[in-house]
Image (tube, rainbow, N blue to C red; front, side):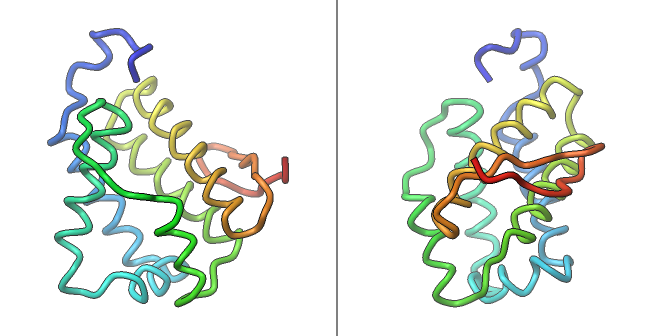
Length: 148
């Protein structure tokens, strides 16, 4: 987010990202499509550690904190061994992310978080389906994708 002004960056800090991560994953866990996939991958007792790790991830990506270490791509592609992952999962993930970022951040910050997530989703999509995706988003909802 370095290209956003310092004024817009104000208020985007680890506690704000933590609120986003907690809110987003609360929605994920309640979601009828995504909840079962995440439940298969993350045992109930590991959720606090996962939320901390995802806060580190978004802090590294958006704030440059360098607090996250790991191979996101490899970790996610390994999900195929324990759960069926379909393109619809990506669409729902992006839609929930967009709803949470829009609710918690001002427009330009939410948009930057959303574009970043779509880029991450694009690359992870390749890991599952051997093609990159451009997600088609209408009013914050990912309705479809195009292979690119």
